Length: 356
Ligand SMILES: C[S@@+](CC[C@H](N)C(=O)[O-])C[C@H]1O[C@@H](n2cnc3c(N)ncnc32)[C@H](O)[C@@H]1O
Image 1: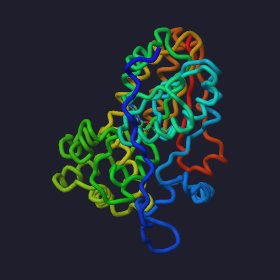
Image 2: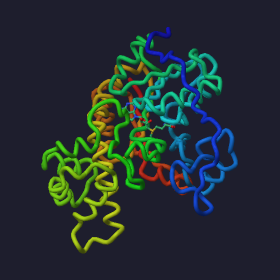
Image 3: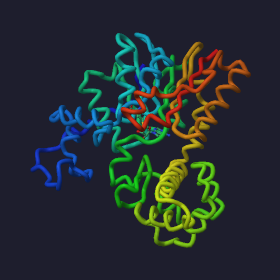
């Protein structure tokens, strides 16, 4: 039975009003606001296809990762009930919905108040009404409550999560996730809650920073960078300021590429802290068995060794305790072909488990 968890308020039409084409130098747009064709795929399908053929993700979109492997692990069937904990652009959800028809239902969660209405509108336009798709803006740490509100007292037939951030979030300069653009240092998946990255960096102790860079990014220069950031307190308000501070902290022998890798790792570690990504994953893993009916399948896609370790440990402990009947013996990786066509898939790791 559908209950109040469904987002029922009218969804704004995300298609932009007609405006003059932004002017940019050269053949291809560089800044996010210049990618107006990619941001309107229904009007410029050829342009979007062209961007994808170049192994890139069109602005404002997210290419679902390992979708064949995810479907094989979840095995959605007509009439079943499933949960997508991380709706994002809805790429996985759309493929799952195709398998659930007729009669099945997908409960889709996401914490992002900016992207969720756009994805919801897109999926509704494809014909998925509330009989097939329930959408709820919530953190997946509240999975138990979301499943209960949906009225699924016996649990779901499958639960899926594709962790981390979407390409839309990373590529939108206003979200402050990337050092590719200079912007306010925010990094919150839900910008209405909690502390921004700039606020977190201002408050975290030296030891908090060292732990975050170590655990959240396996950063070899963790202490050195942490000390440099503490020394620069008060001037870490933008993505560029943070990136410059990390680069300036590097020992003199470090080459440009290694400094770039450290910057990327520090940005990832800060994002993980700001969104409490390890904490909410632990909560999700604890809630999973209760949210799955007998024989129900769970599949989790992770992008970081700290996340994968947690999923592996939880699934294996679940098998030993008789909670899960089986789990993936090996981690499943994206094919070489997918890694070439979508480099964002190269760090992805998929694990699955089946409820006893
Ligand atoms: C990698 S994307 C998912 C992409 C999606 N599978 C697709 O095919 O488009 C991750 C999404 O999960 C959301 N997310 C991350 N952590 C979350 C959490 N704790 N609770 C709910 N949503 C979360 C992000 O806002 C983002 O939209």
